[in-house]
Image (cartoon, rainbow, N blue to C red; front, side, top):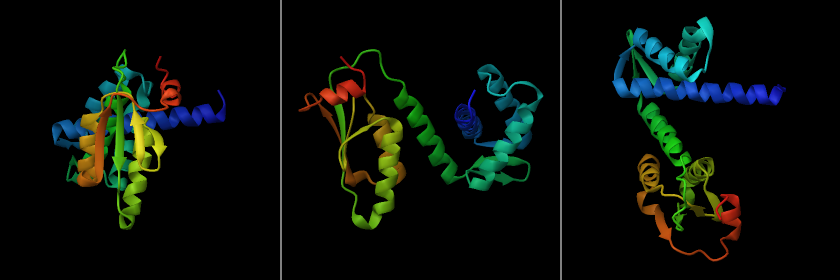
Length: 188
């Protein structure tokens, strides 16, 4: 396996471990540090993420990294999600749900239009990066398309980014020149 493949595999594992830890703490609300390891170790074992006796070490390092990033907060011997951690967990869950495409396309395009003011340019860039990460395709600067239902995800994004009135979600029956979109999404 080449260096790029190993690096990619390591990043993917790190994201999976992060998702598991945030999800475990998010479900429990406030969780003892000693309780994080057994719950996550069991899930990691089932997923085959980290083999052997290194699981607890990997979890502890990942947990400490999440604390440093401000996604988790220590309360004595317990760990809880911060507001930033809750937002990250919502985005992770939203991406996971958006990546599960249905077997058949319903023939409708989901078009997202946003007009975020210049003084919130950073937020506009975050929205674009998030949409690209989810799988949306850019039609114009602030017009993006996706073939599957993602209304719940868009509601989440509006709430997380506090851009409710600046973003419109449309369900479109026909879209002029959508051949390249069908090719991109492998829709026939």
